[in-house]
Image (cartoon, rainbow, N blue to C red; front, side):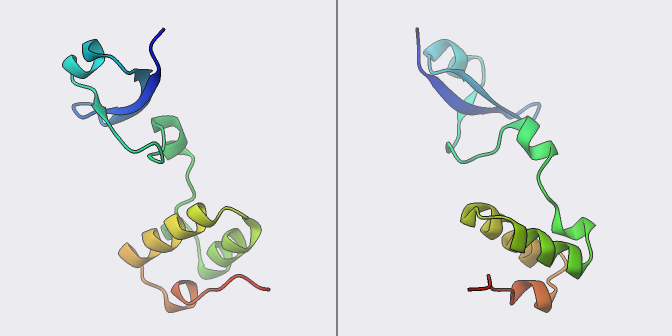
Amino acid sequence: MADLMRARYPELDVVCEVPDTDFWRGAGWVKVDDATPLTEEQRTLFDPAEGNVDDVVAYLSSINDEAERQRVLEAEKTGKKRASILGWKPSA
């Protein structure tokens, strides 16, 4: 059985785990970085633009995943650019 690869099907903007074979690549699937969220994960990601400053800071304080923190801060940088969020640091 073939290993799986995380891949995007550009026409539908879908990211899934598919077999890492020439068949799937030939069908239009393009390998992406393993850190790319699956389509289902994308639907449930926290979006800082949907919350007020207190909501976003509370979320950042509640998670222990540094990659997720960076993702949220990057989303804020390209979105509302609120200084009180961009300057947030985890408490010691």
